[in-house]
Image (tube, rainbow, N blue to C red; front, side, top):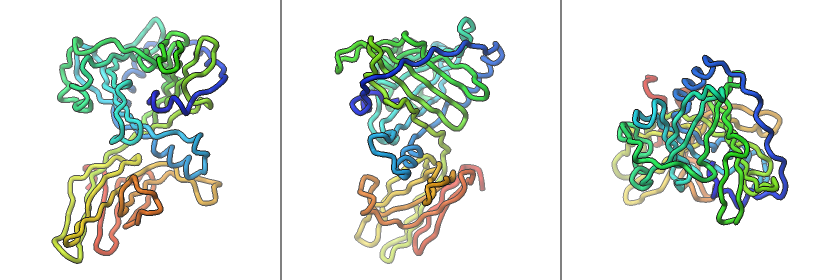
Length: 343
């Protein structure tokens, strides 16, 4: 999770250290299965916008809401580094927000038979600026050499040990082994990370504590960021203005965990900013007594950063979370999104 952006808001005065992990009982075949699941399931896009939206709609106090985080894993073919290699990127906000260089890492995954765990070990790029523009391009990272990497360090630069717990995978650092100097706070801290994964969600939380056990970084309530696995939709917009030629915007791509896409609507000599939003997640009901998992596709006149009260909704459609398409036609405006190869 993006550590530095959340540090000031997450200081706590007292905390109880995390409990030691339970004895590992995974068999060799379970560990091989866990490794295969991680390598096939982790790659992709994750966004915590559905969690942020739900908390805001549920009137959670602002100081207790989870800030939005976007994370992506890309599997690459790099035999010089290992047989199972992932490149991880993190943004503090949506995928267009500030890139987090501290968590721009190359992870190698192996079965650690002695620990009965899948070990996920991080390294960093020697030249971050060179590789950041192609961080999610597996083809251009193919054959990445080990000499391009350096050992990871800092609070996010520690091994994660994954074990199968029922049908869910849990990854944790070894307590007391992930240590770093927090220069801004002037303290040495020990970090504990907790990751929970299934093929639809990745939950992450962390805690940094000083020598006395006092929490100096992390959420005081130790609740997880809920990063939801995204699907990529193909979208288009068609607009027939009163003046000027028709507009058809094809080949648009959006993920369904809160992605936003900016467009412009041209009517004669006037250009209006607009944006599309596609979000799949749990929506609280107006009564507050139940909630539904829905997909919502909306289009607004205005900009995403504008206050919500100043936006004008141009159209929207709502369906079940399992639906493979969404769209609307209102007056002279049409918009559609669908999963690829679904007709």
